[in-house]
Picture 1 (cartoon, rainbow, N blue to C red):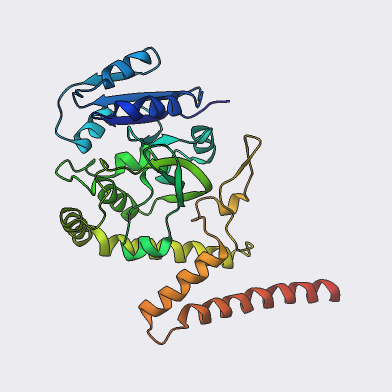
Picture 2 (picture 1 turned 135 degrees about the vertical axis):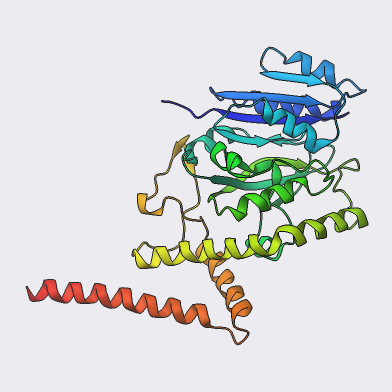
Length: 323
């Protein structure tokens, strides 16, 4: 079996106390086609010694001054040749078998993104809460995707005109993912935890309501949000009604694996946004409010389509019985 090459980049600066756990979480995946790159920003603690312990298993690493996190990540991806890409910060880490699961759901010939749940942990690696992107929050622009759990393919990476914007300090991932979503990539989400996100006093986003962070978020939203939102809405609605018109049972199946093997989905569902029925009904209600304050427009369309489909099926049955 041919496994797609997965390229992972870890940017690091003075995070020696967490860095070894991060590196181990990548290497101990034991994924057979892994390309791992570590970019250290000239740390003054023991980070270099930590990286050197694993240097024979890291494809490329360097420790030198850079111009910040976005610059380090761009440097790392410039060294990568993988089919699937992602980055894990030096204080976060992956859940076991994450890379195996990611490799099972990716299609390489069309732009595609994958993400899942993350667990927020403290400086002692104790779990504080489980966090998954809520589509409502994404559509309203209230938060970014759960960055440690996000992966994309090279087709999507090559399609975006620019890489991470190095002038951004807080919202570099948010801005990148908005630009990716504007291209309406194929989306798959995992139903459980794929990564752990550490929150501590030295985390840049520890104070979510800080004025510099809020200012940068507002700037990014002004630049990208309206077009991204409309593209994403169209994508979700198109996927939903594709299911209806093709008589596919709704209740999109999230990507799961059992015993390390992918649970196959019908081929006609490939490429559709993967959402639960309950989640999508909530989205429909929000769409109705946005488009028609009186509400109900999407439910009326859905009901009409369902009646059409059921009526067609009933006619087929009657014709068969008559014959």
